[in-house]
Amino acid sequence: MSANGSSESSCRSEVRPTNNTCFQKELSITASVISMTVGIFSNSLALFILLKSYSSIRTKSRASFLLFASSLVITDLLGHLINGSLVLFVYSAEKKWENFDPYQIICTIFGACMVFFGLSPLFLGSAMAVERCIGVTKPIFHSTVLASHHMKRLLGVTWLLAALVAALPVMLSKPYKVQRSRSWCFFLIEQTKDWLDVLLPLLFSLLGLLALLISIVCNTLTGCVLIQAKLRHKHHCRSMPYHIEMICQLLAIMLVSCICWGPLLIHVTILSTRATDESPSFSLLTIRMATWNQILDPWVYILLRKAVLRKIFVLLHGCCGSKFYALHRWQRSMLHSSAETSSSSGSSDCRCLGKTPVHDVVIKSIT
Image (tube, rainbow, N blue to C red; front, side, top):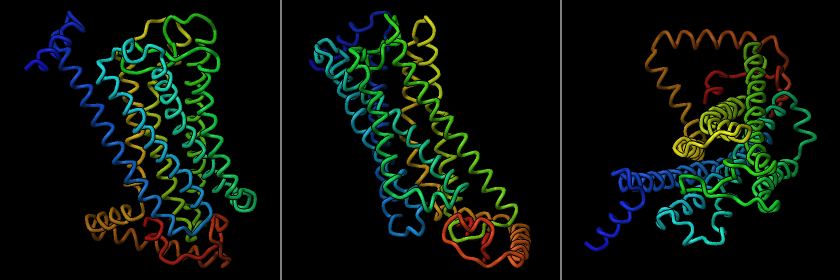
């Protein structure tokens, strides 16, 4: 009884004009716990699937893609663990920063983690898009020049760049600040004092938007090349299913990142360039949308896999019946007639963009 009474009194004293403060607090804690739990489960499952895929690697390009994909899932998993734990700690302390963080140490760590685990998935997504674009459009260059250690260095550079941006406020003596909702820390984006207060959040948002733009351009170019090769019946190698699977995953990652991160990045850009007041509720909404990016990313690898796509193909075949079968036979006849006119040189990567015979390519390209 005393514990319930003290919690109720603290809730009433926190915000006097409203009567649903306790309900909002419990709702926020519940949402944070659910988000953290689902995120950890999703990323753990996706990581297990990706690590299992290493046993069936057939091409160098797929190995590079799995390296970046696994790094992305690990980054999202650590982001949920660290940021989620900090959020729960802040709510458990009733958001009284002056009591549990008088020297702003926790706020600095919280803000740096928010920036690092926010930019890292965006940078990794753009790096994956660039790697796939080179692998499809310049397959010989990708096979002969880009070795595995180059991919690992690129991975390290993406993490290093995100860590550098996260550490800039500390190095420039512009510490992170508790936001209006008092549930998280970020750059000073309200009542800025000098040009550094404007530059730091603007750098964060512009780098994030640039990463999204690179992903859009590279994924669009890669998709166009694959579609063009498919329409010309020239891309008939064993690596074709892997390229289709990877480009589907990249497009899904790009779409999720744009939806989840776009509002926050644009919101931060507007607040950094204009002398407008921040809306606490809208800022909290945008940061929660960005958090869902780390929850949805792993489901891309869980759902958009060959095994799942194969089941979808079988399901469509069963639903569409004879019409689908007739279309399937027509596609196979067209592809076989095209294969007869092509040369018979073999390749295990994208170098077969035009010269490899096909056997039952329709089923293979979907599965």
